[in-house]
Length: 637
Ligand code: M6R
Image (cartoon, rainbow, N blue to C red):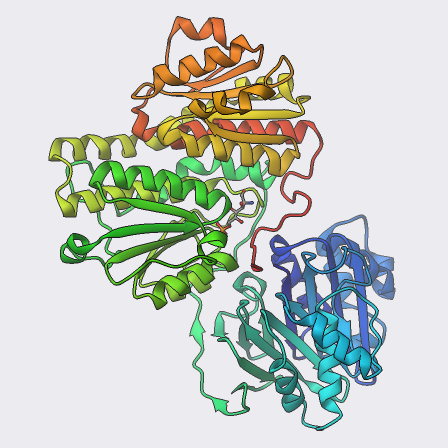
């Protein structure tokens, strides 16, 4: 995680660094910092906690700004920074960082930028240096002293050590990089090279933005979109030397590389809450439109074939497929589990789902007859990227389902299935999950069409179910008062259990994940039939059990499992579309969803659970959009 930015040019430097960092806050919010080269020194400003703390420090430094700023208004603050009346005003080159702590607690000392002992080098880093302890010991033996507990400080010291043998800054950087194991995206400035911003990348994303008013670096496109759409994607082991009017790229041996820029087909995203208290609530409410958008041009009416031209698998490929593997993390993993159920049900090919972090540490059994599907909102999750690379090495066709068609995963994909959920700000994934699940419906039905594995009447009926989803989701959102009331009633519980069976089992996992990540209440999801194999021992009158019951194969079974929980005095909550008087005697709270076929219920059963988690967290006064210890994009393994 962590996000880095940098700029060289004559536009207001601090303004860019701060606005760039604000677009990267989804990558971490443990601390923030900037370094600016004033011509005669490198000045560092750091603050623990969110970016606002750094802004406040800089605002205090801003003589003109102090007089003109009122309150916390960000626009006014930015104007204040523009008239920075200290020596920093002259600065034309700087770097910035937003941290998600890996090595060392989130305090000011561990905040980036880090500087070398003689202040010759300042740098910001996203990634993890795996051999930092060994390097640190070697440098300590040479007399270097360290202030922080980070792996990053080692890089600054190492570059300064390399500078003892050369006065070529690029060469010193390359000499240091050759000694590093692990992942890095770096922005580096040198005291004695006040016109050049250096950037380097290995296994962590980094882009260069080109403009007439100077050049930028950033971990992600939104950080530069306001300034330019011309982007160079740096590849692993490439090092850039960036000046106001030029960009040169070298490989790790110092050979020059010619790279073309690309024009990003995006407009600057204006992210605001549109009147909602939190982004999470806004994003939950966007789901009917996200479904329409994901279906747009792909499923037009139930009697027509699904258009999924992005998937480059022919009927011939499909016939030869011997395995499908889906790899993902967190909420995307839960969407993948629903995908497995759908593909197995509709086309009868066995599907394995694995957490990317597990997949990469075992023997990878893939070949040219396998299809590997990587699922990721961000397209930048480090474990999933590594897993995809391994599958590709084994010759598997890789299909990536992502919300970021510009991401690293998208660029690695053989087939790319974008999910069109729009920019998701809240760390807790909601609308991207719904779009991922929908993408699996489209994919599974498309495979069934190509494979002829479902009768045409069934296919048509299933497509109708998909087309009805947006209205059904709207009905749930219109009924949220009931869920709010349930949240108020149960917000004091210390633990929660979510249970379901079949296609809704991943929904139980997702309901538990949503609740724990934003409310910090301990929550677990189980297949309902597993309760009696251990977890039932936890049940008493303090334990809420949320049961998901939709009409179909497993309804009666989940009902019996719920009775068993009720018999142990658990406090029972149902998410159901069933009108069944038997429910009244078991459940203290019944949250109704519209009538639906069990196979098409997971999106509808998840939305009340998103709202339940949201209202509980909000009621408890938690930082819903930026929960502690988390980041939106997990770019470390
Ligand atoms: O960007 P990705 O979908 O690859 O991210 C995977 C997980 O980090 C993510 O889903 C995480 O679990 C969310 N915080 C869940 O709300």
